[in-house]
Figure 1: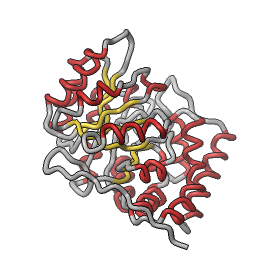
Figure 2: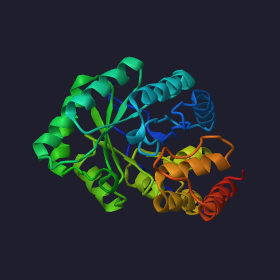
Figure 3: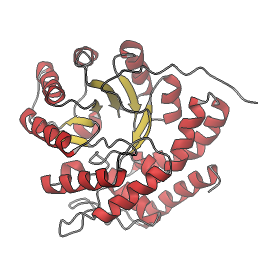
Length: 311
């Protein structure tokens, strides 16, 4: 039996928009001597595009952005842009403590030719709500590309109030939020309060099919980098309104999400990609690679995802 559900029609603006759908968070393959393996990035991006993803996101938390030097970040973004070659948008992450640093990074990324920026705020000292709004506002106003706000209280120690999001959504190119709280109810609150002003991408900690059904516009996450065909198929089924088929696929896919929730992000994605045949190396020190038991669990999750789509 085929069950259909009307998915909320996406708001389409003439400016400051990104395609909806699947945006894998890319790994950062950095050798012990600090060299970035640009050829591997280009191969991975090419394979992801062939798997029908809608965009790619280097320099996310999954990509160890906080551990990278400025020259490493530039090399990773440049390799991603080369590989994408305009076929899908490149939407890198940006992480900084100070507003000045964040603005400088955003300007450089736009000059490099990115199609959007996922903006994070690293936190060390207490910051007022006015300071938080000012940080994201100044970054957005410094560039013309679409801005995706990123909230991950567990990782970054920061979050947005609804009032702050309402204020930020008044800036023309702040059009999206990636919510990594893991709270699906909060996502529904955001869509109810800010639908039409901020569109919502889900993250690794969410059940993406549920977020799509609530009105979320896509999935920006590390798991999509290692199960891109399954992720794209899940999004396609939901958009077609085939809820029964989508949920039948979501159930076996959840195992890989569980791995990303259980293990450190960089170690998890690098292990998964190694199992997929990509020599991405270890997490950047002082992080440590995963042990054999974790690798077995991740391998089983990948196998479940492959079987779910007949690979």
